[in-house]
Length: 296
View 1 (cartoon, rainbow, N blue to C red):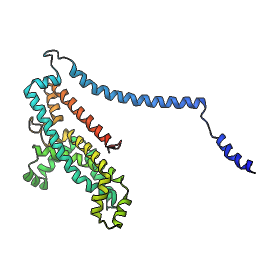
View 2 (view 1 turned 180 degrees about the vertical axis):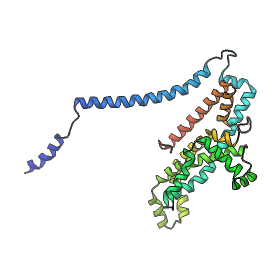
View 3 (view 1 turned 90 degrees about the vertical axis):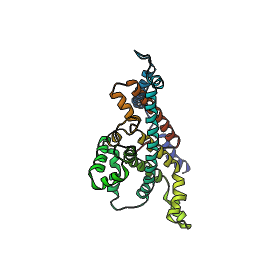
View 4 (view 1 turned 60 degrees about the vertical axis):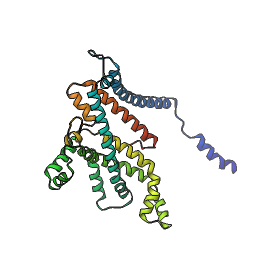
């Protein structure tokens, strides 16, 4: 009887299907095909980025200066690029902080509460992410120039074609993105921890500040970094709504476009490489902090 009881288990182990030689070859071929496509796409991205760096390294046909060398040797160009860099850093920092101030409570409400019209609100929040950036800039311009409430805000804030307008345009786009990243971080915190804290006498506000936020801080920081990078890379809404005045409202992407439009390709590519470096460092920080592989 014992021998009969053991046989079924051994039989099931022996009867487990094993891949045939043709099956193993097919699996290897399939994996090789997918890997080839993956590496080809990654190589294409690197080739496009490296093209900018390699082009800057080549000597110019006339002056022998290109890119960084030309920027550093020309006080006017250096001032323009450094001013654009400073303006981009400051405005994107302010707009990302404002975005976080809106995103944390909004994301917490979406994550924890069954709100009325939740799906509708969730869809509305996503609109700035999916609408074309140029359309966002035009919509902001119409709101602050043609609508009653927006015109009253404009009289008070003076945001159209100003540096404040840069912050508004960045905030409009980045805050929606920030809410998504923040909600992903809060969703990773088990609500049971908050329930236990409340059962021990903590109020909802105290549980939020002392339990939820500390547990989600790494994800929140990663989300803030990517929100800052998103704000810094905005182009079309800023150009339409805040303007493209050099040394005043021209942030880095706008500066690259303005130089390209007048034939200053070297300066435009130098600004491009600078922004690629900033984006790469930002992405490394995002990954280092344990950011999700998805950004939306």
